[in-house]
Length: 261
Image (cartoon, rainbow, N blue to C red; front, side):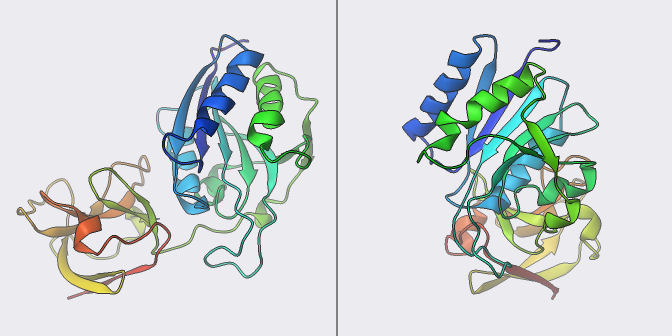
């Protein structure tokens, strides 16, 4: 390999699920020189998957980084009209050198759509195993990592990738912060503006803030978070508390509303 290979594995197996260990072992079995880090997202959430694909592939990315993802629900997803079929494994390489090999399902590629110049189907089996992330996909990932392009197939139309959804909870971190799918550039309300925040049927008053605005203990804030790079994702957070608890334990992918108070 020209560069050391780091694989960021994203999947919805669940924290502590042995499936992660099996996939990591298969990848390492195929190439002892790689390093693999695993990231769990909520079950079936292509929104959370898409946010973390974007984060890993665009923030501190480098040649030799592979973001390998499989979140493949076979159901109707929020904002879509048709049931997904589990998706196909696809390949793209960004200008920063990061490679993405991911199941193209739902919104998995939506948050990096504007950075993709071309995306290709990976010619690998998608049927015949209940665990394609272990049985089939690692072979393709390691082959591509080693410069073998024979499995990179037909180019997909970028228009087939849906736009990122707006005003949905994209991820909930360990502190209970509700990371949103909208970016800082889309926030039209000025810092210090009082707002009504509605999540999970609960409405609270908060304030628009950033690094320069002091938020008091217990106050709810609508502010740019720590993910998203130069154009960060917004988030709902509580100084010294948990937005998840304040809003009654909402789920990832739920809609929310922000309106001037």
